[in-house]
Length: 229
Image 1 (cartoon, rainbow, N blue to C red):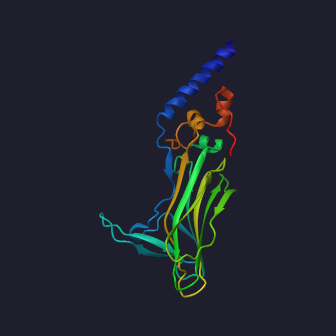
Image 2 (image 1 turned 45 degrees about the horizontal axis):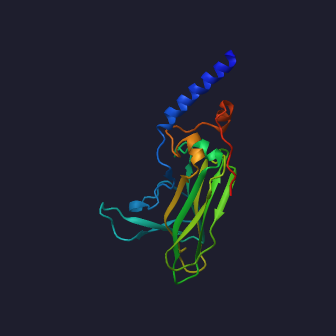
Image 3 (image 1 turned 60 degrees about the vertical axis):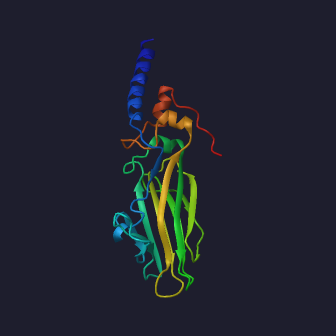
C-alpha cells in the first residue's frame, strides 16, 4: 500500500512539474529556416557544401531600408547550399512530440532559372537523428522553369529526429553562370494531434527536452499512439 501511495505521489509530483513546464509552452508553429532572405547580402546561417555561391537583389528595398536577395549557384558547374538547424537544442522543439510522431513539416521555396539556358535546380528537406544518421529525405524534381514558382514538400517529422536541413542544388548546363535561383525558403513545423498536445504540451518549449513517452508510460499517463494514415 505504501509503495502504491509513494508511486502515486511521485507521479503527481512529476505531473505538477510537467504542468508548470507546459504553462511555458509557446506557439504551435515554428519556422526553422534562419536568414531566408539574405538581407543586405548577409548569408549567415547558410553553408556552401560544394561549388560556388551567388546572390542577387530581389525586389525593391523595403521600408526599413533592407534589401532581400535570392541565391544562385555562382559560376560553378554544380553547387550545393544548405541551412541546418538543431531542432531540439537550437529551436527548442518539444522532443516528446517529435518522438510521438506528431510533428508535421511544411517546406516551401520559390525557384526559377534563366530563360537563356537550360540550367536547373532541385531542393531537398532532410532530417537526421542525434548521430546524424539520415531518417528522412524528401526531394523535388529538377526544374528549369523560367518564371518564379513556389515549390512545396509536406510530411511528418520522423521520430528521433534532431537535425533538419534545407538544401539547394544548382546544376549549370550552359553559359558562364549557374542560373538556378532560390528565394524565400521556409520550413514550418506544426502539430494538429490534440491527444499529443494534451500529453506533451506545445510545439516549442523553453528547455531542450520535453517529457519522454517512456516517463509518461511509467506513470501510466501515456496514451495509445495514433495510427499514421
